[in-house]
Image (cartoon, rainbow, N blue to C red):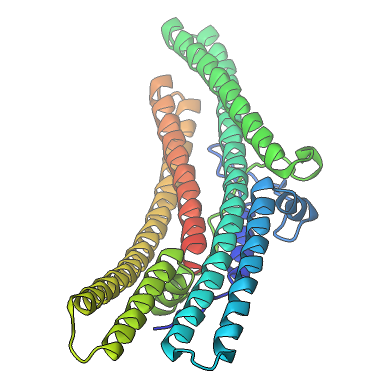
Amino acid sequence: MILRRIDIKKAIVGLLALTIVSLITAISPAHAQEAVQSVTVSSDDAALDKSLSDNPSIILAHLELEKSKLELEKKKRELKKLKDADESDERDIEILEKQIYYSELLAGLAYEDSVKSEKIKLSKAIYDYAYSGQMLALKREASEYYSRLSEEARKKLELGYVSRLDYSDVLLSHSQKVSELADAQISFDSAMHELNIILGNSLDTQISAVEGFAISNYDIDAIDAAAVTARAQRADSSIANLESSAETSRLEYEKQVAYYTEINLNAKILKATYDKNLESLEQAKKEIEKDVVESVASLKNSRQQLALQKESIDNQKKRFEAKSKEFELGHASLNELQEQYLSLQEKMLSYYQSIYQYNIDIMNFVSTYGG
């Protein structure tokens, strides 16, 4: 059950590629508005590469890896001496070989986990920036809409078509939307600042303002759960640790029983230890397999929910447009119009939140399982 080390570089590059959120048409209650600005960084952008190469955590992890390599060289020299000795025990040689193998494997995985962790932070910061940009656009549209509605309500008030109380309600709603826009601007600026800190340079020349963001195009249907599980197990440091313990206890047990004709208490303990380590290893592998299956099912369900949410928005948009025409003709009240508009806003807000969470879930799936 020897665990081979894998190179997760491709998975990490894929993770960053998924992070760069492309734009879709922003859904507007008034009309279909094309989002013409976009995130301009990419997975091979120099700013991203530099921010990661200068990252203190990655630098430290690399130094720790180099230190581990030096320590392993000492063990390799010990192994050579043991092999060259006239009366070396083959089992002692095999035990040392396993120690070297798993030490090297775990050192590599520790470094890869550190790099992956920092790339996830960067990915999350880009997602947060794109999402806050979308929220800013949504709140701006709402503020502008209520500005227009306030003007329309004022004209209808002068003509006696709406009451002063209804007009006051519209003005109050407009003030609330202006306040929400200010909060959204603060969130957007904060997300940009956070990304600036991670990138370590001025973001203004790296990313333009965001007016919308897309659902991840990661192909869930193409996921091979068995293959993903196997990759995840090979790249999991806890699995490697458990396998190392199982192999070590097996070799120590075999060495013990080879020296004695009867199985003594120490041998029984070693055998029980091996059985326990082996069981823990198998349970850990099954747990990863279960998590992969559940994650894939959850992602597929989330994607279906997104489609339903989009359909609900399209239907609500039609209801709002119809109510807008009724209002213009004097067949609908201000309250009825606002109810339809606010319902559309709520559905859009929920939809964008779902897109954000879905993209984060995809990112976590890829980073965790190398899918």
